Image (cartoon, rainbow, N blue to C red):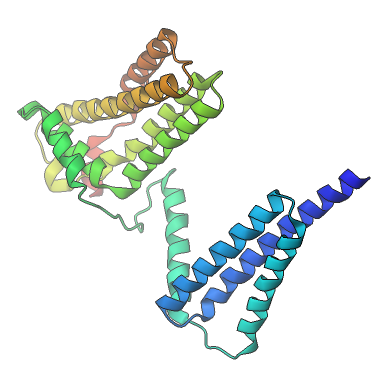
Length: 273
């Protein structure tokens, strides 16, 4: 009976913490300038951190004290009449819309989505040194630089790689299945990159060379991700073996040249841009 009561109190406090977080987020619409917004977010972070810390350490008294401070701050704030910060509301609505567009863009092309780019000079220099200076590597060079500078694709690739490393560390047994799944997801989401090229760039007489270059780019990218996950698995868990290395290498080759190759439409990309 006592254990059940403690569990119910624990769940109740979690609900209260979520409610406190929502209230603190709700207050932001009345903040007048950026300084107040930053200070409020810092206050929100530390209060939530302290509540979670005391909750998981079973310090109920300190938990109640911090919660009381939180509600006192909230009631002090709403006591005065304040004007809505319409600019903040507009920015929040735009950011929410962009998040929805980015999620939908994982499945279909969204023309209204604004693309963002970043130079990443260090990564660009590494690519320049790694890609041989040949005419046959022209589009490999272009696709590689486009991927490195395109925030959506680059950060998606980075996130999946980090997630794969964490999964391999947390679940060492059968981690090679998750590795293959991450490779599959990465390859599927990178395929739309073929449509990001400008029409003037893709007006090239040898369309097969563009297709081969894109396949080469995808295969190198997936092999790089696979080897990162493989060596991370070897270093963190020592569970990597030759079987995983062979299976992963074969999977990348088959996936790129038998699945991705059928979904490439260079002529379609030229008509879209």
